Length: 260
Image 1 (cartoon, rainbow, N blue to C red):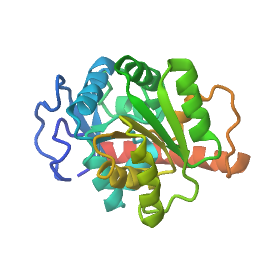
Image 2: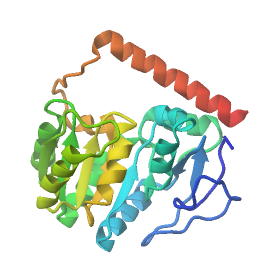
Image 3: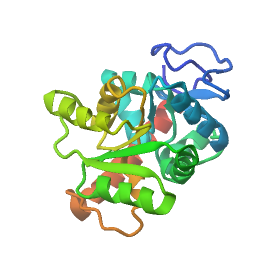
Image 4: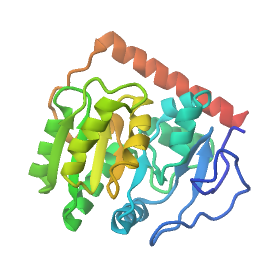
C-alpha cells in the first residue's frame, strides 16, 4: 500500500494498520505516518528531543533514521532498506524535500524541520546531559571536522572516526573492527554520515553492537556543522546536478504514489 496512513508502531512490520494514536517511549506521544512505505514521526522538536533523551536514559540503545525522498523512493523496491527504516525507534525527516512532500500530500509536520535544522538542538541537549558523542563519516575530513565543531561550538565530549570504504551492506570483519574501536569510547550518541542505503544498513548493524549507545543516521545533514569548510565530493559539479535531478524525480514519484 502506498500513500500516507496515520499512526502505527515502528516495530509492527510492513503491514499498515488502521490509524491510531502512537504512544511509545518515555515521556512522549506523537503521531507517526507512512509516506510510501517509510514511516515518519510527526512530533514537534521539543517532543522529539524528549524521545531521544528517553532512549539514552533507558540505557538500551536504539536507532534514529532521517530519510529523505530518495530513501522513500528506493524503499519501494529495496526490502532491506524498508526493514531498516521501519524498525528504527525514531524516523525523522532528513531533508527539506521530504518536508515539502509531506505538506503537499496532506501530512504536514508539526514543525517543518529537517535534520540540519534540529541538529543544533540535539547538540545542545547532549551538552546539557553530558553525553559522549562519536561521529562516523566516510568523506575525507568530515568526521574529524564535525567532532571538532561539536567540541568548540557546544563543548561536547566528541571524537571523529573516518570510515572510508564502508562495505555496501554495512557489515563484515572491517566493520566489526571499526565498531570495537567505537565501543572503547563508550559513546552515548553515535552520529553517522554515509551514503544511502549504506548508512541505513550500517546503522542497523551497529546499533545492536554498540548498546547502550543511540545511533543516529544523519547523512549530509551532519555537514551543516562545518560552516564554510570545503568538503571533498567525488562526484563533482555534473554529479551534483545529477543528484539534484534524482532527488527531484524521487519527490515526484513519492507524490504520485501517495496521490495514486
